[in-house]
Image (cartoon, rainbow, N blue to C red; front, side, top):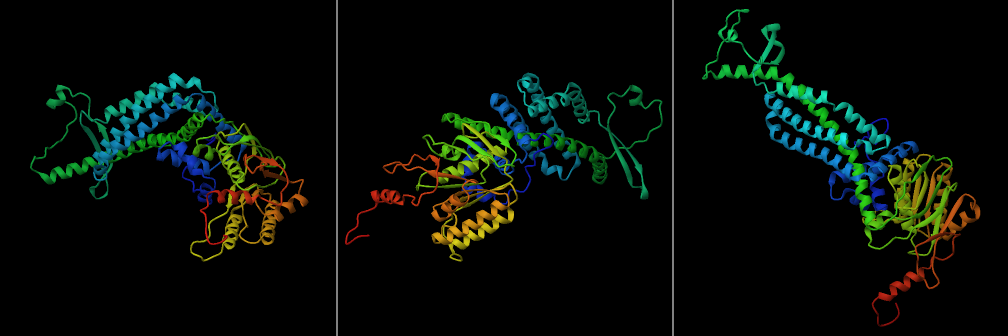
Length: 503
């Protein structure tokens, strides 16, 4: 997933992870990527929340994903081999773990059994590499298969097979030890017994004199002492085998995590293909100057939640630091805002987006300030909550970040809400932060239209002649009405009749 290192899935999550998942409906996206697999869900979430800041690093990952989309069956097979190895080892170690904590001999046996299972999976990886490696052209996957071919060669398997045979100790064990201070044993060295003893050895004819003794079967203290000596000798070997096993397990764990992200992308691609949704590979560019241009961009989460088709939008906001979105109620403004936020997150982690084309600056961070329900505890008013949340967001912002506002600061009157929003947006722009603002505050939108027309892009949700919505946004300045009567009329269609006077 990275050209010059390993992706750190253990990094702390983004401070606003919960808000992004809630406001952008990211759980819908993550569930589609996971396809019922909790591990894939966690991997997808970590990758989505920990996006890349370098356009070149994003392109590197995009090329890998394009390779995966071209040969999904190979990637799924590769991932299955890795997952099978991890599950087999987990099951095998579960049998030995209780004894291994107390006895080095049990720890050694458990590690040897795990190592045998890993060797089976490593051979499967080598076979897959021999059969299918030439299909892949991306730098990342080509390097992975080249590494597998180099490291998992015949000499490697020959050596590991020899070690596994020796660790069976079929001819017994030979242990040497030196006496240290207080006649305590030090420097225990364990080796397999001789492969074959000659008749002279068995008859003890010739050679250096040797001394031996036998422990009586009923000598429990002697047997216990011998067992302790054997365990001391086995301890170093058990630790060495355990470290080797953990090294291989770490490799499989890392490969499972990084492949898991691409399998999640394949799962998402399959869901979108079922609906006939078009996707494209976005073009990431540097922040300065800020760029954002796309065609037929749709909200991927809404697409996944609905059975019908979703309306896309075309926008060219290159060079515009503020995008002000106004227009008719229920006209698709919030959906548009979410579509941009989700597409940007997907682009930053190297994914495709649901659009005809997409170009965007790589933002340093993404924050959302969406309207919330009234404070249930009544400890603060709605405006206080919005201001407090804005202060928390400001503490985490850096130059090159983006803030998505959705009906913010509308909990007070038009004049006060517009003035608060104006000051907030001005402060953000001065700090080199891009703002997308959905609002019904005409005073706010009109003041930007008059004073900042050249640096602000104005989009408006369309309303057709008879009040229908086509959910398309077009360039256009703010209007003094949001056609709230259309919403009232729709409510009136189903509201129960009343008697005894007007309501």
